[in-house]
Image 1 (tube, rainbow, N blue to C red):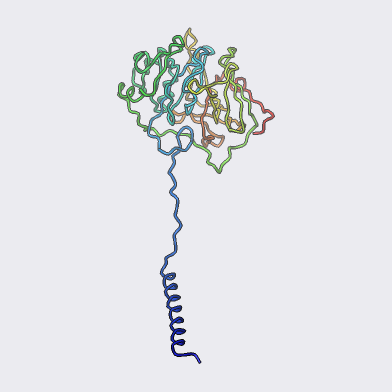
Image 2 (cartoon, rainbow, N blue to C red):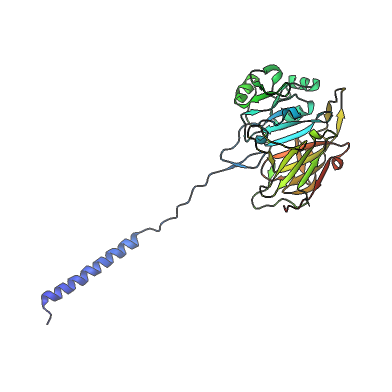
Length: 350
């Protein structure tokens, strides 16, 4: 027989186990479901003229600088940092650059050269702070009228503009970008980004429109090979490297080749206006254009929309750019875009 004491121990054990079970169930029932922890995502902002995503929204207005393209001025400083480079004739077969800076500023820019009337008009359309050293007679009148906010080395040589000792004038004037705010303040100019000009870009899910394969491009301005350019597409980096006069275009500050994601050619009417071969270029009437991106070429058009040169598709919509840097050539209607630009497909698959 089982004693009362043993029965009591059995019942006590059963009661204890039941109590523990109820307690554990109670604890389990009282626990709330654990919510998954959401990771915070950083808000990013597209740079207006490159489409590259930045951690801070740009509030600085564009800065447009006239950069010397004479062989004695090469390699230029800060050219790889430019969001956009416009290349066009200044006089004769000699081209100059208008380099647009907004998303990145190198330590110095140059060599800086003189203004032309159509340089000033481009700066006005972009609402850019304009940097030049010197001017043509017409550009001088436009600048002195206050048409654009600007700083000019003719008045600030040795202060905001510094001369390099390893090159001779006029190929040795550089603008020091640490002086940008002081320079703007000196001429009572704001550096606030007010006219929100920007390009349109493909997003990650989109692919550029198809065209003709063209991973080698040549742009001719005349018989002087020093000012004729070529581009070669690299499918690995999805960019073009540029050469001029048979030499790869590099940045003196980095020693690295300049790489661009989009190359555009705009055909424009050019008129010689003086005995020095200076020109006037019609940047208003619109015309034929070629667009090169991702190793492909297609025919588009360009228009001047509220002072801004814009590439447009046949249906009138704005061309979408591949994120990255852009190089834009202006070529004369005589001999025309078809005679000035050639393109070929290489064995490389784009």
